[in-house]
Image 1: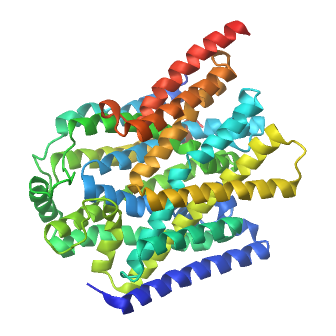
Image 2: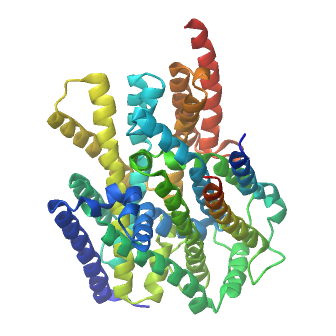
Image 3: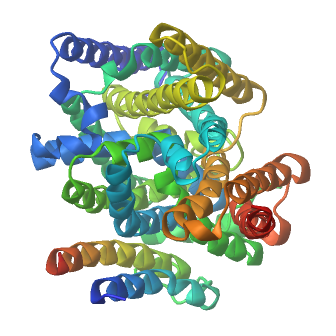
Length: 494
Length: 64
């Protein structure tokens, strides 16, 4: 195991160098108007100009962030078998995406929608509904931003080999995200993203496959240690190689609800609507699905971390939060030299920054355009809208930082809270497209608001999931009841 | 319903079908290559959904 200040300097220098390189190349590409290289535009569209391998690698860096590389090994280390629910819902999300996204794209093209708020505004002929979607979309992105701040903080903490404390690293994370959000799409350059994607992909497979072999001589031995650990774990630990009865109902409801939200995140749907060719969208869906397979070695890394703890080789209590989310970087640090730790950390860190910056950027733009301008001040100038967007973005980012500092959560669960809120857009969106006569705008509003309030009530007030079921699923039940009930009442009145 | 949509509906049904068997496979034994039964089941489920994604792509190409 490599330790000490020297190792920290090596790894941190690589991380800092990488960030500077990404920013410089991004700035150069934008200044010279190489817009075709800018991956924010190219997320789906660049397939026409970029080689398939470059495209595939850059897509991976765009989609995956701290959540996959830290969150998934984290939940595997802390809770064991439950990690599978996360991998499988993601895989199903791509399948559902393949089936419904082309339909969404065609409708968006036909109706000239650019954002999800545009879609709601047009479907229900209501600017207020568009504003509601813009604002709540941003609010439910808070846990997503929070997880990126925490994740980036953990990466810096680990690559500094203990030289930096958690508070400093989270503030640095916030500053990095804020800086890259202000400069907009500068960071996202396809070639840099491709390199990042390649590093992360190699790292996850290398560490995932090698770690159990180097540490325990193979996967069979790893599971023997884990079985023993599960039977003799410390008080408060929740590790299990099988699912508890409440885990099964959670998994079933998660698999039914979360995949529906996957493509409704404001930043993702914007990319879909912007795509010029539906064939590229479909092809990319399959290509990105391959990355989902790469989550399997990430699960193995988490298991290796907890087995190393069980053997007394690792002293960090990776069975509890927030330490469990350090699992990936911890195992990487144990097995690989500092320069590789630096490269892996830099790749994951840059991917997390670009994900957070993209969400913040879209949230601000949506608020300014679909809420402020359309509802409150139609005559607002472009300059004023930019100012409002930045104020709103800053507000969302600061709330996320405060939550990361005072109420740090487990990365995977933070994301799932966001999904639980965002999935409430699904029923009125799909019904609005296919069965518009069944739903009124009041019904749509009541359904979404009721569903989101249900999620917030379960998460904040109740603090536990009724019958073990995923909060997003409970929200959907309330959502559907309210949609039909309120639509029935208001349609009669109309 | 067109043939393509029928196939898609069937694919979705197959993707969710393993949910029914999860309660029965929720155990450690028998092990396959050192992996507990539940882990083999989930691994196969995950990979099969990816397989279904590829099949959907091929169906789409076939029916246009």
